[in-house]
Image (cartoon, rainbow, N blue to C red; front, side):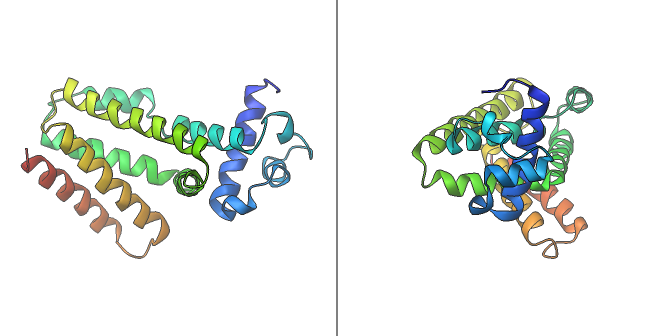
Length: 191
């Protein structure tokens, strides 16, 4: 397999766009090459097979979802209180929803995972690591709430993002913001 990381990322970014737009059935090596603007056959030099491609797409989405250094610094500044949790959740919803094709591609990958045990194992491990990292960060920072609060927020806000991306007229931006605030308030009240 080829090692040019820039080319691999361009192919993966193209694959994310194809997967989000066309679904798993439209995700072909030829479609990826076309989306990435690479010669036909390039994608086959970078991915051993479809399972390898799907796994690498998931990793690329998570890579692109990661907060930058400024976001991390802002998260650690100031009091670690309920208002900070609201700020963090607003930022997270905005960042994840801002990469629309990435989120939609992950939905397609999850559907594929119901039919592909290897992909299901990879996604389960990756999502579990994400949940554990979020819980650990929350607790380490001394933010209000417990592990269950963090998990409930993740579940609620993931679905809010899904609604926002798939049915954009369902909630106005102000209502999305209000729902983020209420999700934080109510999940932290239960602890």
